[in-house]
Structures are given as C-alpha cells and as structure tokens.
Length: 266
Image 1 (tube, helix red, strand yellow):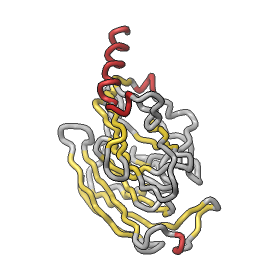
Image 2 (tube, rainbow, N blue to C red; image 1 turned 180 degrees about the vertical axis):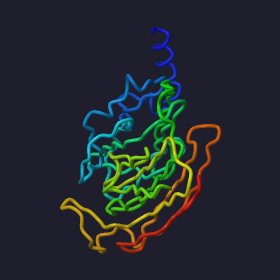
Image 3 (cartoon, rainbow, N blue to C red; image 1 turned 45 degrees about the vertical axis):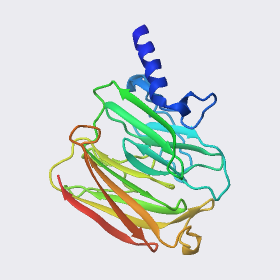
Image 4 (cartoon, rainbow, N blue to C red; image 1 turned 180 degrees about the horizontal axis):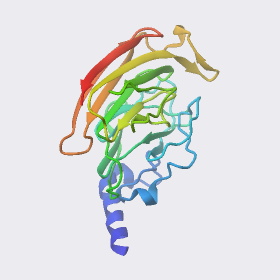
C-alpha cells in the first residue's frame, strides 16, 4: 500500500504539468493524475450536477466519472476553452462563476485530459492510469459538439437492430446509449457501446431549438452565430493500439434541421 501511494503521488506531480504544481490551482480538481482504481474513485452513483446546469436533470449513470474544475472568471466576450479527453476535443463551457463539470466514461489503461485556452495554449494536463481491468472499454464512441452554447443540438444514433438512441430514449437494451449526464445543455453529447453488434449504424444530428434561463424556445434571433458549426467524431477501439477515428463538420443553419452524418458498418 505504501508503494502504491508513493508511485501515485510521484506520477501525479510528473503528469499534471506546470499548471498542476501551482498553489491553489482549481482549473481541474478531478480526476487526479497517477494510478486510479474505479472502485475507489468512482462516484457515478451519487447525484451529480453538471456545470453549466442542465435544464433537464436525469441524474447519474453508472460507470461515468465527472471531470470538474473552475476557470478564472472573465467577461461575456471571452473565448471558449477546449476540453480534450483521450485526444477528443470539445468546447468547454462554464457557468457564470467559471465552474464546469462534464461526465465521461473512461476505460482501463492510460487516459489523458487536457484543458486548452481559447488561443490554443495548454492550461492543464492530467494523465492517469485506470488499473481496474474490468472497466468496460469503449469500442464505438460517437461525440457531438457545437460552437453555440445557447443551441440545443441532439445526437441520434440508430443501431443495427433498429433501436434509436436520442434525448428521450438515452439507454438501449443492446448495451448502447447516450451518457445520461450530458444529453442536455451546451454539449457535448456522447454515445458509447462496449460490445457492439454487427451491422449498419446511422449517425444523425438535429438542431432542435435554443434554450435560456426561461427554458427551451424556438426563437432563431437568440442564436450566437448565423451558422452553428457542429463537429461529430467517431472513435473505434478507443485508447487501444487499434484505435481509429473519423471527424465530420456539419453546419446547422436553421431550427429543425436534421442531417444524416454517417452510416457505417461494424
């Protein structure tokens, strides 16, 4: 046990980077670097609050862990940071106090998390090794992100058996589904399967509407951008030697727009 603690502490200091050594640094409070074991660190069964707050709270989902932190508060005109998890970049939106909390399902082995400033400079990087080999390894992951925090954009995935994962039906009986912690609000949305069936998959993106403090609405004039840019990333065999990925950029011009991004066979 003493050896485990010493190695974990040393790796945490070595892998957190210069920002992690600064006193009082809150840019990423969890996870921490070094050796992790899900049974000791996983709190996914507890009530988790996302920042920015989701208007619809569906509670926690088993197997997910929260990436939490706090960035320096700035004016409304500040750019958007990026959160890069295992090489997958998505916009990192915060609440008015600079807080963020996003859910992610990590597999066993080495995992990395990085925050980048709006101009691309590194803010903090943490790498940890998940020692629990029983953790489900994502075989198919689909990530949808977009550049307008007021837009409600929905990811839809249809699996070979005809099941349809989307905001109203996030969990499928075949083991796939959307992360229930992140299907509302400014994104990203995340679909994952650990034991995918063979056959044809469909990936769709839908500009459903907008939202504000008063709730969801369909007023086009509140958009932050005339054209919303959505980025959809397909990751196969994530975090293994056989990993491969594809990225698609889809412009969204009007509420109600539904676009077939990709069909693929597995």
